[in-house]
Length: 307
Image (cartoon, rainbow, N blue to C red):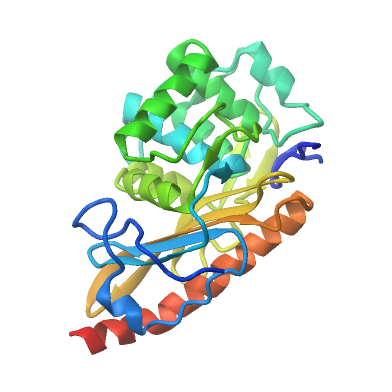
C-alpha cells in the first residue's frame, strides 16, 4: 500500500447501516439517540462512518460499523487538544514562543506529505504554529509542536493516548502526531467525543475557525482545507485525507433550536478509502455538506414538534 499525503498543504503530494447510539448530550458520553432525532431523516453516507450530536440535546445518530479506521490529519485535533491542555492560552492571545528547529525547517520541503514552511531559528507564536498545523494541515508543524511540548514525538504520542483514554475514546490508538501513519486509528463516535471536548476551549474554537493563515517569513498564505467553513453556520473543525484513510471531516456549526443557539458537531470518516486523497476529500465534504443541510432544515422543526 502506498501512503499518499493529505490535501491542503504547501508541498502536497501523493501524502449504510441504521442509526444507533452515539455521544452527544449533557447526560454522558454515550447518550441514546435524542427522541427528536427519530422524526428526522438525515442523509447518512452510504460508506464509512458518521456521527452527529447537538449540545444540550443529544445524539442525532451514528451510521456505519464503529471499527477503528485510519483518520489521516483528523489526528491533529488531538495534537492541538493536548498542546492547549499543556499550554493554555486565551482566545485572542499569541501564547508561548516557540523556536523552529532545523528538522521542522527541512521537513517544510517534503515531497511526500503535507507541510507548511517554517524557518530554522525563527521565533513563532504558539497560536501561529497551531494555525499552520490546523489550517493548511502542516505535518512538520505538528511534529515541531510535539517536540516543543514533550521533548520528543514518542513521549507526546503517549500523552495523546492518555488523553484519549481519559475522554473515553476506547477505540482510538494514536501512533503519530500528524496522521501520516495509517496505524493511527479511531471511530466517528470517538472523534465526536474528542471534538466536543476540544470545542470547549475558546482558543481552539478561534483557531479552527481561521479561514486563512500566512506563514511568517515565507510570504505564503493558506486557505483552510475545510471548504465548508463559513457556510451554513459552519465554524470549524478539521479535514484529513490519505489513500488508506479516504476522506475524513469533522465539522461544527451553530444552529438556533427552539430559540437557543446550539453547537452541532458531526464526524464523517473513511469516505472513498483506497482512492486518491482528492477524491476522498471531495466525498467527505459532500457527505458533510448533505448532513449539515439536513440538520439545518430539519432540526428546528423536529425540536418544535418535540416541545
